[in-house]
Image 1 (cartoon, rainbow, N blue to C red):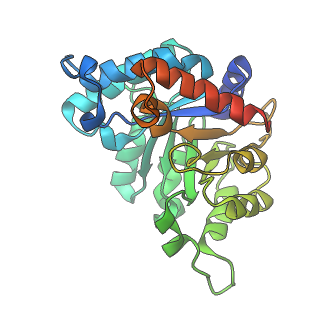
Image 2: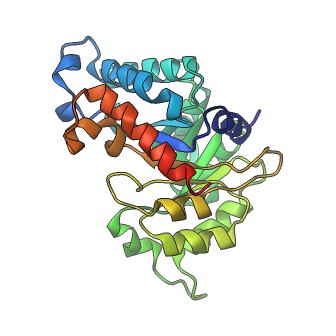
Length: 276
């Protein structure tokens, strides 16, 4: 089964397109998990318990795990999420050339990690992404129009053709999608660009960040973020929230740290389902 087939099954099972970002910033972890052997794992475990009924996917960001204890915590996190029946997308934004690209892509074959999908950076071109694209059962989400305000510095630049860079990336990703395993990262904070990318690539699912703490457009995220790739039963796509869910108690002043995370995931699921 391809990643998007598995994702469609999960979306149908929980009636949700919510991706929960697992970004356990050590400086923001609650006291109740700081004394654990692996605090980030202890935190993620509780978050997964609280949110998995509303999660189509979990999305750990590699930046929060790139140390020995962090990688152990990530392995435990992925295994625990899979035990709950939830696929895992590693937000790593990888790309490089030659042997380096192949080493980066080997994470998709790592039996100790066993992730289902990964984010990649298209800046180095097709050959840098071939090692990822060749794993046909894994999802490969290509950065296209990101949710940060500085994304326009490069992504909105006009090429000689008059098209902005992000449109060229979308067109290339469509060309690279021979195995039906390519998705695009397009932020909800730029709904006009989100609509334009959907016009260009009607069949590619999106990972849409920026709906939570960044205040992106939830309606646009659903209207333009979902697609029905060939061979997949029903529209698929993901709308991600990280801080807005995992730190909901801290940001909204709610009691019950992990209960607040579960409530935030459920609230986002209901909000998005209004537009599905």
